[in-house]
Length: 471
Image (tube, rainbow, N blue to C red):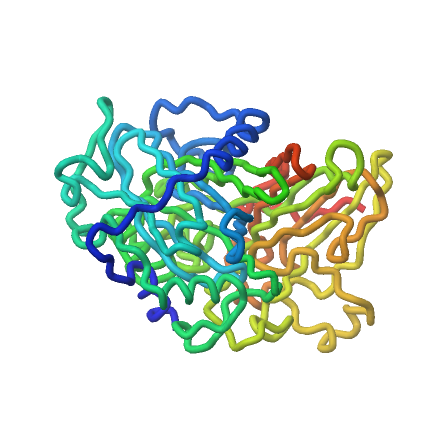
């Protein structure tokens, strides 16, 4: 079904004079900037940095990850997600944006061109609800320099492959409907009536986004032949020049949460990211050949939590992105645990809850990540509700809620999100079949006042995953 899904990327014909996407409302920007000023001081970037892989850091990268987004399909002033793509170099760069469902099914993609030192801010409401894509163009499609104007210290080049593709037209209504259905767990006609995500029934689109530097305008996804080719011969490049930020804006409750886009560096010379059988970020899409050259993320994390007391009355949520380690396509509806898809729900290798006096509590972690259904392994899974607080490829999980009950009001979490079985991934990657990369963002909020979002502390890298759990 994925070839038909790829048609979404640049589908639809624009009427003459189609309006460009609206800019974020002033209130959204003010809230976003407030969070940035309080919690996200950004470094001044002079240009692309040399890659230092296996140590995720705040540096320009070849791939950016927005680990989780939410967009209300009903309220035009409701929940939405904004993110930026920034170019840290004077040279122009072309990027490819892929939108994935919360079960890691590719839904649609589009291209964004950046002149040197350029920035493009995207409100996902414009894309998902209104069907308007970011209006950018290289000099070949923008000879008068009015769509993507060049600054005095930057370059503006021509990408002939973008002729007729940039600036992009609005999405056709059928494509917009597909995107909305797929991101809310409903059957999509373009996916032949199959489903791509979980169903929550609240008409909120959920998923995650990747942004890659590329050589050409393309309709391909990272898992398609030709996207990653040895020696930079495919769509993707190893240009470590991208950085950005994201914000989830909840106008109804009067706050925004934001953090940095996850920077994923590329290096085609480091053995850690250039040796077949090693863990790379896109390894599941290139047969674990390391041809993508992207560093993997962490597998083990530490983060604090607090109940709904004091300043943050809404308590603690975790935004958790995980790598299912399979190239997931759409499935028969409805999504069913342990059946469709087989790896869902995902478990974890270990999880410890500490209070502020270092007293540990270890919840039952069953079913095991990547294992068959509990009924198939009764000796390992006792007859009690499974503990899978992070079952999907991306999610928001409330600490102290039904999905993740905790025995303490305050404390911190040790989260080892590695797998305990390599069956679902075909015993890949060969270097460590149980390693399973992830990313965690810790959030707290108070209605109508303020909110914070901070990346959890990374305790390792999937380049050399930790498999020891304190208990």
